[in-house]
Amino acid sequence: MKKYIAGLFILLFYGTILAQQNTGFRQGNITSPQINNDNTVTFRLNAPLAQIVILAGDWEANSGKGEMKKDTAGIWSFTTVVLPSDIYNYKFIVDDVPLLDPCNPFQCRDVGSLFSTFIVSKGRGDYYKVNDVAHGNVIRTWYHSNVFQKDRRLTIYTPPGYEDSKKKYPVLYLLHGSGGDEEAWINSGCLARIMDNLIAEGKANPMVVVMPNGNPSKQAAPGETKDNFDYRPAMSNTFPGYKEGKYEMSFKEIIDFTDSHYNTIPEKSKRAIAGLSMGGFHTMYISANLPETFDYIGLFSPGLNFSGINTSISTYANLDDKLLMFNKLGKKIYWIGVGKEDGLYDAIKNYRSRLDSLKIPYTYLESTRGHIWANWRAYMLDFVPQLF
Image (cartoon, rainbow, N blue to C red; front, side, top):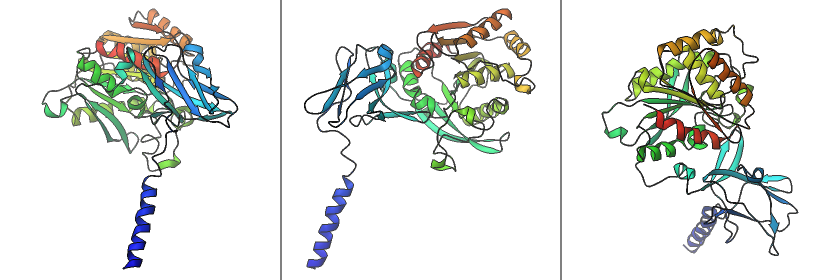
């Protein structure tokens, strides 16, 4: 009995240690990031042996860079200028080694990179927060594609009250950019929070939002396929099937699945499609090839550099004729947004000139900065309230 009790004590002791081994992510009593009352932000890192620590974030001031200073206790710190209300990503560069903030448990993935993240309130950032409002649901589901002869994954947002209602809803199809997947708009784009908050304020009509995977050779996001962790995030132009037209021409399958499995209004006037970067490229060609399907189009920094596009592929052939037919059949909104510093700015300017020459009207928003999520989330705040 004594041996049994002693053995049980040892098991309990080591079990307690093992159960607690992952609880110590904080560095003592250090707070980082600290959002100050004036919307400046203070960062701290305990690294007494480090020689140089640089803060690298995605805000506009000083290009997001800050040289941190070390105190006598070995704690490095830096306080930003006042930051506009938004959600931000950042890292520490410690002696040339990028690190997540060990005091901040909140992080996000953009393509293959991980970042620590935080929200500055009192403005646009409030739309990216979980607020005390009615919430919709986010569903991961699979549909079968006859075109690709595989099951493929969708992320779907349903608005508050959807499950308890017999009402039918309009649909926004929302497409990701290169390097993204069906998780991108939920994670980096804060889609569910944006929709919840806009609907709660009466600024947007309740709608279903469908977010497909736009990588033809990938069934789902990294870690969600039979390849498991062997499939790691990468830019879409490194995958087979990139800009070969097959995904765009298969899109009717996604629409049919949505209309048959969800309470939707299967009408042109109750459908919208929008996308960022590569998703903007897809959006433009999908809407041009399906002119009787969508009344609302959103191109967010669309990747409309047509060099290298094979116009012998039916998807990409006769674009002007397709655009003219789309315009003839009528539309409510053809919305284009881009940042002044975006590398695609000139390509989008050329596309606008093309629309002008075809006498196809559109709405244009020119923002600051470049090819970044801060712009695409902001475009959603402008675009979504105009739908339906």
